[in-house]
Length: 41
Image (cartoon, rainbow, N blue to C red; front, side, top):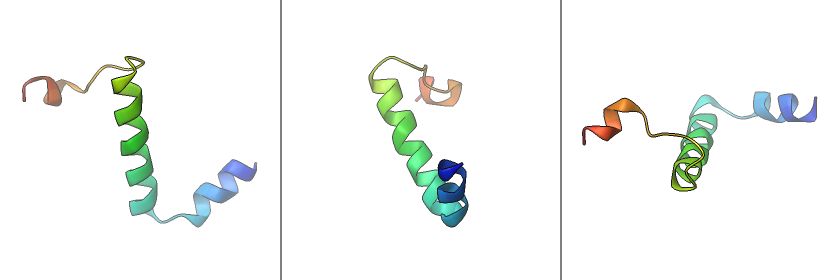
């Protein structure tokens, strides 16, 4: 519940930035695959 409240306090831009950073770390660790549009680059 505390996590939900903390997320609601953040603005959309801040949440999006944190998600992007988390995705970057997870990709670097091999825990998730890069999105298809990044594979072509």
